[in-house]
Length: 162
Image (tube, rainbow, N blue to C red; front, side):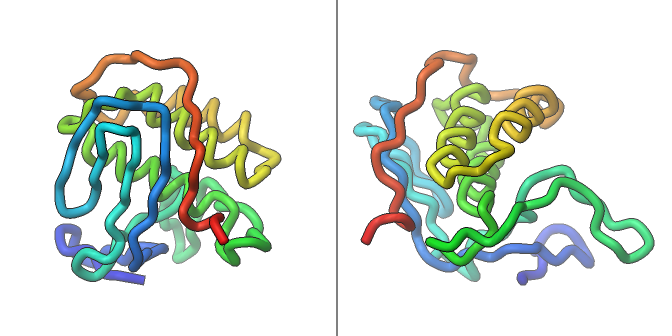
């Protein structure tokens, strides 16, 4: 858990403290900041090793009501990663949405990355979760890049290698 530096009283559900990499077919879209690096060859690095780690709340929406967290479940523990099955998909999806006004990746592509990672983890509710982000993701502000690619391929996931 980690306290928010910008929202008083906010504690995040997850904090990831190491860098994670995915290799996509989204080439020619370089970007770099403290939390995310995208290379021309389609490689994306989420920089969990920066500062106190990358923090987020898993799949959205979630809300606190009468001291109980209500909202989208993050699923069972994955036997390979020992984390919730949606953990890595929601982490990458969150960082892409966080920097949507700066990166050359569209909302549709970000949502498809979420879907492909869920599929690679064999999450049984992928279609429902993907439909939800497609339906509701548009409420989270404007994107720098309009929809482009419709087919996303992810050839490497750092946390599943070995």
